[in-house]
Amino acid sequence: MESSVNGVVSSQSISVHDFSEKILEQRVHFHVMRLNGGFFLWIGTDSRLQNLALAIGGKHDSIPLSTLVLGDSSDTSPNSLAQRLALKTGKQVFVSYNLPVTESSLMLQVENRIKQEMQLHPDKF
Image 1 (cartoon, helix red, strand yellow):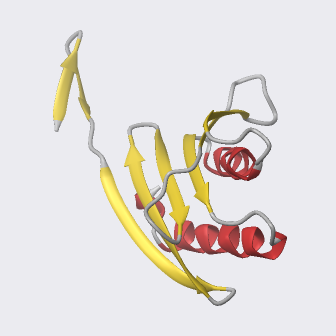
Image 2 (image 1 turned 180 degrees about the horizontal axis):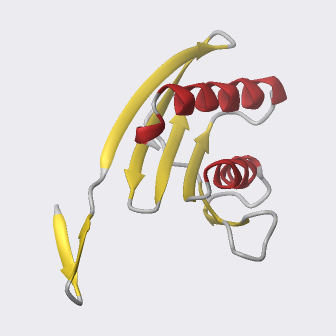
């Protein structure tokens, strides 16, 4: 889809990319929506949206700013992941992390799987 604003034509499209992986004996699903200037990443084992964090880098910030838009503020997993992905990509990142926070190794393996997918399919993020 193309749109025109003040005579400038821009290509705005949303692409969707899904993948899954068995991590620590559970099937984890990943849903990526690439947006203009950023992406939305949902991670979970079922179809719940328990939280949503947003991270965006600034010109003068070494660490992207993040905020929790939806969910329990005591769970910092979505904020942390969104910040790290925004720092890695330089894009605006929305993250919904819907997995138990009790296992730190799960978070690490999930993040490694996302980075692997980013290397395999950089055009999807």
